[in-house]
Length: 166
Length: 183
Image (tube, rainbow over all chains, first blue to last red):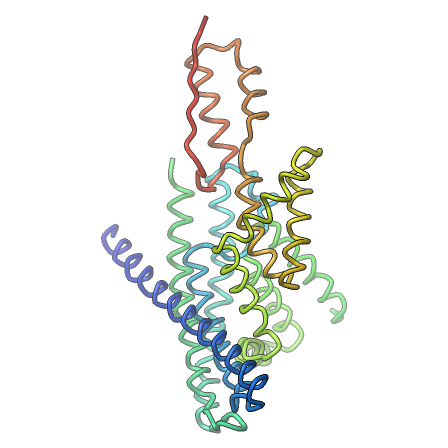
C-alpha cells in the first residue's frame, strides 16, 4: 500500500511540475506578446494582429496550469488566523476536511467541463480575427481540473498522514 | 427560502470556511456551487459551473494581474525590493511597530515605481514576511529569563517546545544556537 502511495505521489509531483513549467512558459509568452504589441504600436504604429484574442487564450494555460502547481505546493491563499494557532495534528484534520470539500467541487468542475468542451467543438466557436478554435482551450480547462482532482487527493493523503502522525 | 436569505447564509458559510483554513478559491467555488444548486437546481448549477471557469479566466482585463505579479517576482529577485525595505527599516525601524511602519513606507516606495498593488504584495511580502516571522531577541530573552529557575534539561525542553510551537509548520529561516551555562 505504502509503495502504491509513494508511486502515486511521485507521478503527481512530476505532472504538477510539468503544469508549473507550462504555466510559466505561457506567462513569459504573454509578457513577450504584450511588450511586442506595445512596442510595435508605439514605434511603427502597427500592433500585433489579434493580440487581444491571443492574450485571452494564453490566460487559460496560465490560470489552469498554475492552479494544480500551486495546489501541489500547498501555496494557495488561506486564512490561518484561527487554524494557525491549533496544534499540528488538529490543524491537519481541519485541512483534510476542507480538502475533501475542495475535491467535491473540483470533481464537479472536472466532470461537467468535458461535455462543455465537446459542445464547443461541435459548434466550433472560434476567435473573431485569427479564427483560432476555442475547443482546445476548453479541453485544457477540463484536463487541468482532472489533474487538480488527483493533486487534491495527494494533498488529502498528506493531511491524513500528518493528522495520524504521533 | 428567499434568494436574499440564501445569499446571507452563503456569506456566513463562506466566512466560516475561510476562517476554517480552506483555500480561498476552493471555498468561494464550493459556496457558489451550493448556492447555485439551491437557487437554480443541480442541472442549472452544473451548466454554470461548466462555463464560468473558462469565461472568467479568458478575460482580457485580468491579463494585467499575472503580468504585474510576474513583474513583482522579477523586481523582488533583482534585489530592488530588498533595498527599498532596508532603506525604510533604517529610517523607521526604531519606532514602535517599526517593522510594520517600514513595510508600509517600503510599499509606498514600491507603489510609486510600479503603480500596482498586486506587484507590491508579491515583492514586499517576500521580503517583509520572513522578517516578521522571526522570533527576535526580545522574545528569546524574555523566555530565557522566565525559565531560568528550571533545571538545565527542563529549560532545554521548554526552549525546544516553545520554538517548535511558535514556528508551526513554517520552514525554519536560519540556524538557531542556544548555549546554556549554570553558575
